Length: 335
Picture 1 (cartoon, rainbow, N blue to C red):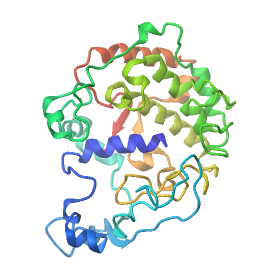
Picture 2: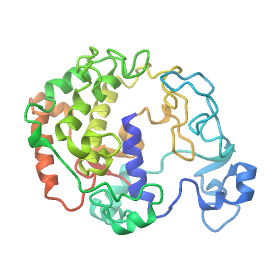
Picture 3: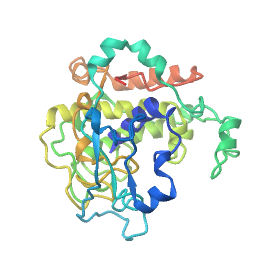
């Protein structure tokens, strides 16, 4: 789901400077790995396991949904996504709720929050740095080159319009069988761009979100390199803003699949690689319940017949001039 990308961005902006690993370092000892338990203490008090003394959470058994998945992945017991994260841990911290609220930004002020946001290695999403290449061992980036955008080479490609967004928002169901790129009349599939905005299946797969990648071309046109372009964060934040508007209109919709979605995407499956585990259902809620909101109001844009093309083109040309990029164009982060 696109919301998981935005959550990953928020998580990394707020916490990446505190950790440098997938799992807490204290859980990467031989004893912890053998015991398959990761329940570190919060702070210096060893009794405050998972923050239990302050009401933050407790140590509990990992719950894993056993309903079958669908999609092209048919192997079994060869992928860490299966029954995540039980290949590593069976017991871990269970959070009691989200401690991020809108009140925090009113107390601290947005500028103070922004000043506390740090990344771990500098502007690595803008350009390849020597230090980044030195630290990365599996892929050292020597052949990546600079960022490329080929908009001028794609003059026959136009960006989505607000009418396209409106059509997508009118789709009733979040998803439909087979819960994949060939689903029709699926809000998820239409927003991704595999369906036409009205939900009809489209073999060109060049609509809405996908169409923007196609328009940008270059680095953004390839799935393995698109995240290196700073505009990637802006595009997916805006995509999530559309999802947010749909959630406000259809929050009681029950079409999030219980089973037969691609691996990791069933309603009660734990999302990979979030740790401690978080299920898809737990984030199938409005953004304010997750601790963030959007400055852009799609409903107002629709009423004013504002063209989404104008917004994205303006963002594109402004980003060309940036040496660094953040995702604060549309996000008010409450960290």
